[in-house]
Length: 120
Image 1: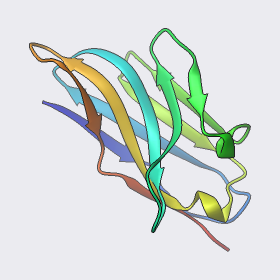
Image 2 (image 1 turned 30 degrees about the horizontal axis):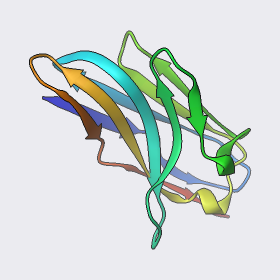
Image 3 (image 1 turned 90 degrees about the horizontal axis):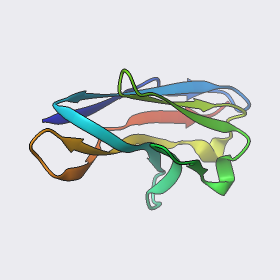
């Protein structure tokens, strides 16, 4: 089985920074894509940033220039550096990955989420 575990959420003041981490573990054969999706109260899930292996990264317009996604493929980890945080960035942030496990089809996996609250 494959698991995604996030860490790094918390409470931060507007203008502050946070770094989220996500570790993928299990019988991983290849990782096609890793990224972050967030969901604010009363709103639908929104793609924040994604990194596709061998391709470019994608960002939501609302976070461009403020957030940076990076990966450590040797450790199957993805990070989200969030700078200049705004109250509207408050949400549960989920790690999301497209992974092919050994002896299994490619599948989309999700972490349990980590809360990010931006408030003074």
